[in-house]
Image (cartoon, rainbow, N blue to C red):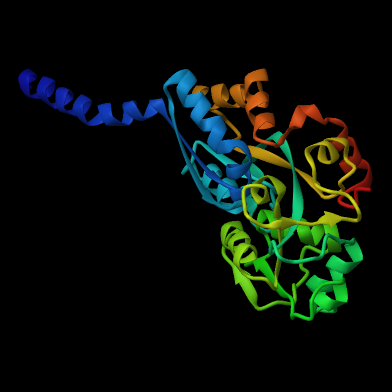
Length: 287
């Protein structure tokens, strides 16, 4: 046995392993675009400044946030919907950690004179029964409804559950987009557009945010439950978390983390624990 060759081989192995070990100083997050814009960018920057651990943040949607985390392609994911193991079995192995409250916001072009819509009117728009803005007190202009492609995106799934109580509802429109970003951009540029996105994301756009059933999606109304279309935002992990993942979750839920979320205009989950009780009692039809 050539001892020198063995030692040389071990040394080369260590050189190969070192770059992998260096990645222990990084966290990779991806998922729901609404969660990303609501607080994740700011939370990641603050955590990096505090610990020196770089947090890579990407979008990709709630489904990616859940499934890619379970597949160990991500350290942490983000989602604005619950897991759907009846649709994809792998989702049953995800652990969801609620950190904030978001709300669905109905948005239009800034020039649109319409200020508020009821649940019944929104049902009419999405089912195709209302097709012109004049039916809603606006101009004589065909409505262009922009929606997310597919039925299990965070926003799309929430609309189906909140408004229609039917996860398989087909929206009557030809204007489909791949993510919330293009939907919001359409409402910024198209005078005939309407869509629904997360309020925390909508606030950062040049759009008009409509009242729903007479209530504005303000921070105070979401926190109190007065604005009914609220939902939790989650961080996603696997069933077993590494130390670096546990440390980030602890930071997100800490006093400092909650302050960052709150300062970004989003309601921290523990600021409004009573909202969970309403959801458990009334389901998605919160009033």
